[in-house]
Image 1: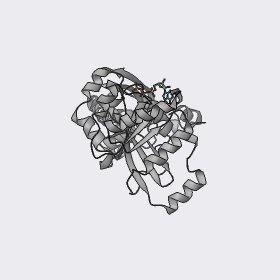
Image 2: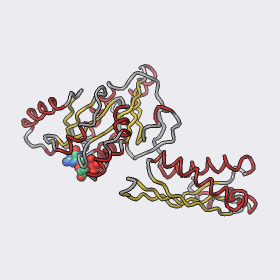
Image 3: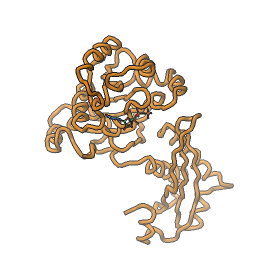
Image 4: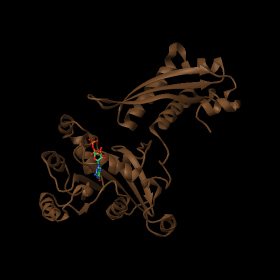
Length: 318
Ligand SMILES: Nc1nc2c(ncn2[C@@H]2O[C@H](COP(=O)(O)OP(=O)(O)OP(=O)(O)O)[C@@H](O)[C@H]2O)c(=O)[nH]1
């Protein structure tokens, strides 16, 4: 079953809880050395990777990867860039204040290891955990442990390494375990109103956000002059790994306007305005996506496109 489709509390139960129970909301970081199953876990917890355009102060230091609201509790999962990488070099680079800050600033840390194992790589990540922030030990890939009895001494060993708040032997691929993990995490999130709407961030891709950001800059920088029928189509949104930046995103977008005069307005004197739209979009998206961004903008005239149903569909509107 797709983990996104299920709600641990059951849809009706969840609805009731929302109305009755006190809201909880908090930030959770998933950390661990490469290959322990962080991405698998994150995908099971939040489904499709999503980033958001939050202007709320609490979240600016984090890169949000997804939000789930279950019952009265809102779980906000964040990326801790240095921990997410496959490269040992980058892991060392991550030993800096930013990452430490990110991990120290959350309500809960899920420290992921392979059940029954603990290597130097795990130890490095563990050493970055901040005192004062509860950490749950996720002993992942339990399905690969054939002799469960051997886990007991290992768990005792782990207990000595760090004052974990809980131990959760589980498999990120098992939906029942994911349900259990949600229930455990919920207890550690503070009672406070949700930061986001219940259904927020469920269907917004980064590509969509890129288009919205161009649109926002376009309308802000052209003022009232530009008719609302102008739109933005994201033609390309490609991500490439980059040794320098961790993440590198190439975007090409077309601003579609109805008249030549509008095109001139968007481009501006010597291309000045279009350049500014591009720069402001890039700066914002770099923060939002936690990536180096390269953006190419085009302006096209499509007279009457807003009235032309087939064309509207081809621009991605249903
Ligand atoms: N058997 C089993 N395999 C798992 C489980 N969780 C993850 N895996 C596998 O472990 C491998 C690594 O998982 P990822 O989710 O990519 O690990 P990661 O920690 O995100 O790795 P990096 O991206 O390198 O940091 C993949 O082949 C997964 O399919 C699990 O619970 N059981």
